[in-house]
Picture (cartoon, rainbow, N blue to C red):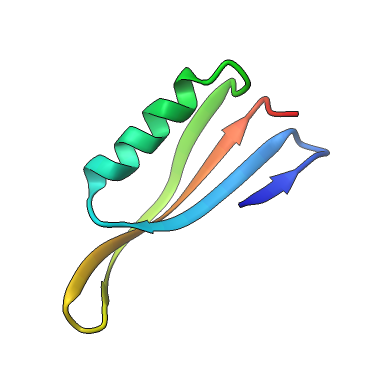
Length: 65
């Protein structure tokens, strides 16, 4: 989690099992009364420990603080 108090934004980076998990997170952020907008900035497929596919992502929210 990387806040920017000046821009009133937060960037959230992480790794998820599937795209549905990321979509749920973005939808939950959009429903928050403290956040105006949430955007999926980036997603990449990666493999963890040569066996487990995962999706790395970065989300930016606006209107926080």
